[in-house]
View 1: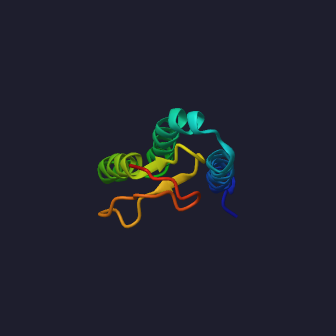
View 2 (view 1 turned 135 degrees about the vertical axis):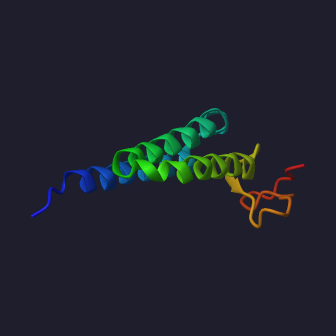
View 3 (view 1 turned 30 degrees about the horizontal axis):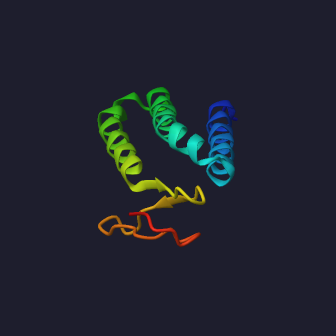
Length: 108
């Protein structure tokens, strides 16, 4: 039987990160979201690259540029409503969000 340590650590780490990040974006204040969002995005990218470096180092050649691109897009496309502190993701990415879908406040 194979050692189940690394897969268990991998899934446990992502489960804890998912719950923590979800609860932060759900209940966090506007100031906290604006301050910590870039740090969270960079931190999650580093954790992901760390797991790739441990499990399959040659894949870093493709993973590093991909994680950088996805992180930049995430930072550019995620906004926060100034009135209700809702986390807003621009979808589709080529349109501009004009109103908060949660409270209706103008985002201009």
